Length: 212
Ligand code: SF4
Ligand code: SF4
Image (cartoon, rainbow, N blue to C red):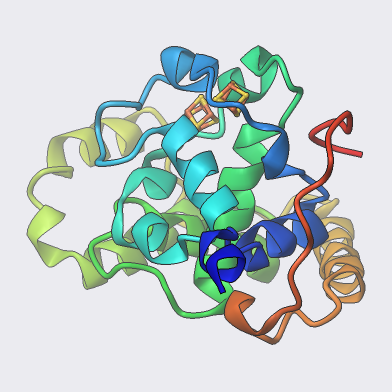
């Protein structure tokens, strides 16, 4: 009984391991990832705490915090980790889990933009900035005035096109997205189930790298 109560919930770490092939249990909380992170300090949790929460299976705390939506994917944490844990990959996987299982906070910064980016790329084979902006402003009308000056400047400099790109490689890009989605579907066996329903992986006994 006591052993069961003391054991960590390994389900979330197992899902990260299966989804991204990253072993969070190698983390020994040196916090070098946090020290190098440009957005640590702007949320309730920081990278080392996120990894700790993964070890403990505390998905609720991670999803209640905004850190994974602030993460820029700069990879500094992964480069600094003495255990070669791909911390940025863990953030990616947590965002994927959030989308897959409808756990995205309504006020999550940039969560909508990330989805609109992906949708735009799938639809057009390229980023279609005007569509992306329109979708963002429709869901966040209060931000319209905030970005007005910047938007005018970007249009003046030709950074925002009024029509989607029609480059010759558009069809190839769309095929590439479809192939990537197909591979991802095949890789994610059991991806339709929420993490809590997946079978746990036991923490390793040690000596294994973050990505194997
Ligand atoms: S740098 Fe690596 S070992 Fe250190 S706290 Fe971050 S994830 Fe854990
Ligand atoms: S990838 Fe994300 S978590 Fe890692 S250092 Fe960059 S912003 Fe921080």
